[in-house]
Length: 463
Image (cartoon, rainbow, N blue to C red; front, side, top):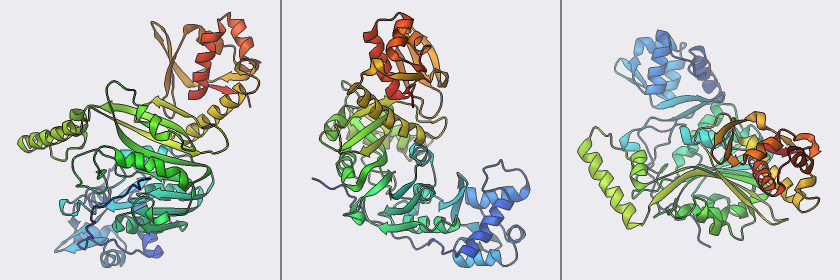
């Protein structure tokens, strides 16, 4: 079985080494940030806040006099000696960006072109999306593949006994350790290496992976580019994951993958998952043609029209040579299970979540288990169900009704108008068969609709 790996060399940066902050110095800096509301996400208002925002959000220098006003006596010099700040003539500048996320403070790199190969990305939409998809149950062990600045590791450390963070970029591991110190987290270990190489023969209850997944002709940015033609790294990773999961352990992965216009977005996974001991939920955030996809990732501003168009043409020629017509965007959740026949579900959902969806995803796995169990024993018509229609919006269609969950991952599904009537009788006490008879509906189509509504979480079995 092929092993997924990255072979790109890593530029070990020396210009801006990651500072070593002892817990006392980290605590003092955090207190200053909190004093000026830099860690709570509030709107910048007064002059001190503006100055701190310039320093830690924009990377702009401030005057030495202003910096001495912002930091208590001695702290400024300690931060300069640590390598977090630098003094230049009569100005002070931060080497590192500061962000607040879910009550924790994260340091990462300001982007500099000279650092592109070792650059550690700040927390962005992809990292937040993965964080909000992750199941937050108590686990003994977790693995963060491609930890970056440590967002997934630090969040997992809140509900897992031990977290192992890996990255091919040593600078990312240094920043993860720094951020753990900054947030007084002590149950994270860091190991350098590519993909699963540093954790051979180990297994985990939870795996989170925000690995380089962008399908481009380049291998320019270590944090972004997949480093292989097409989507081979993704499917190699998928084949490896089960052997690193404990029984009933979960894995969450962000992914981009290729499919043709004449096949559904989930088709490439059907072959890849065959024979693997995992249950799967695939969230599809839409598919892009090569032109749309390239425009998402080109790193040349549009105002530089000549360079932008030339690079876009190069990318388009590569996509054509690779026979790439559509690229799908999404996320996958796996659960290892070897005790029964495995299943796979999928849905197209918005990239933005209305609220964290980890609990919802856990419930979706349980719902599918319950559905399989009921249909193998008493049958769906004899099951007692409860409708969660109050958690969904209803849109009228010519052929029926579109139901869409209004929280978390907004999964939608179309059902017949008759099925909607049945939902009004599902109060947790009646069986589905009784509700169908009360609504005077034909059972066959209603049963199919109800199965789907159970799968997506709009109907549940009575506890």
